[in-house]
Length: 466
Image 1 (cartoon, rainbow, N blue to C red):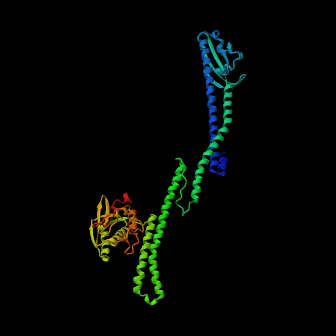
Image 2: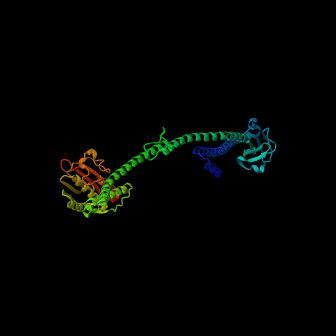
Image 3: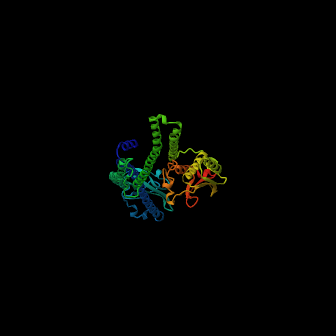
C-alpha cells in the first residue's frame, strides 16, 4: 500500500493532483481506522448495556427468592426481549422450577459449569437462541435452599446495529474521500495559480528590467509572504545592479583619463622618436601610470570590501604612534601646517589598513585645506578616536551622508585638483566598517572646514566589537 501510494504520488504530475491524491488516501485511512474503532466501541457499549440489564434481572429475582421463595416470583421477572432471551431458576440438582416461556426445562448451562458466586457476561455459547452470552448468580436463600439464577443475553440486536453502522460508514467513505480530494484539489490549485503567476513574472524579468515586480495577491498567507519576499529580493538586486553599473561607469571614466594621456604620449613618441626623452617619459607617462595603478588598487580594495573579503590581521596597534608616522611622511611632501594632539591610545585592528585610513584622510585634507590641518588621537566612551580636521571649504550637513560614496565630488571647491577619483573616503568607510568602527563628519577648523572622525575598538575589546 505504502509503495503503491508513493509511486502514484511521485508519478502524477502537478502539485494539485498529488495533494488531492494524498488527501484522499489520508482521509480513507483515517475513516477506516475511525470506523473500526467506532464499531468496537459501539459493540462494547451495547454489550455493556445488555450485561447491566441481565445483572438487574438477576438481582430482582434473587431478592424475591431470598425473602419469599420460588412461588412468589412474578411472571414479569421472566419476560424476555431482544436483550434478555431466556431466564431460568435452577436448583443444585439441575431442576428448573421457574423459567421464561422461551427457556427449555433443562439448564442452559450444566450445573458443573455454573459454579459459585456471580458471573456476568460469560463467553458466547451456541444454543437454540444462537450465539449468546449468559450471566449467572448462585446463592443460598436462608431456610429455602440453594438456587442459581441464569439469564441468557441476546447479541443479535447488537450485531445487527454494529453491522448497520459499518455499512453506513462504508457507503459514506467514498463520498467523504472524493469530497476531501476535490476540496484539496481546488484549494491547492488556487494557491498554485498564484505561485504560477509569480513564476511567470520572474521568468519575464531580466537584468535590464529589474524594476518589474511580481504580483501580490490579497491575503496574509504564505503565498503573499513569498511574493513580498520576492519583491524585496528584486528591489535589492535592482539597487545592487544600479550601483554596480554606476561603479563600472565611474571606474571606466576615471581610467580613461590616464590611459588617454599615456596613449597620446606614446603616439607622439611613435611619430617623433627624437622628442621622447627620459625626462618627457618621467613627466608625461610615469605619473599617469602611477595614477592608474593607484586607482586600480583602490578599485580592487573596494571590490574585496563588497565581497566581505578584506584580509585584516587584527592585532594591538598604537594608534598615536601610527598617526605620528603618517604625519611625518605627510609633512615631508606638503607645505601645509600640521598640528597634532596625540594621546597614547591602543586600538584593535590591522596596522596596514589603519595606516591606509590615516593616509587617505591626510590626502583628502591636503586637497581642500587652505593653510593648516589638525590630527588628534584620543579615547572617548570606550573607543579609540582618530580625527583629521582641515580649514578648507567644508561640506554642507546635507551632503555629508553621501560624501563617503564612491566617485562622489560635491562642488568646484572640492573638485579634483590632484588627481583624486573620489574614492578616498569610500575606502576609509569600508576599512573602518570592517574593523567594527564608525565614521562621522563634522565642522572642522576655522569658520568652515571639515573634521573626519573615526571611532575604533580599543585594545582588549576585540571580542565585543568584531
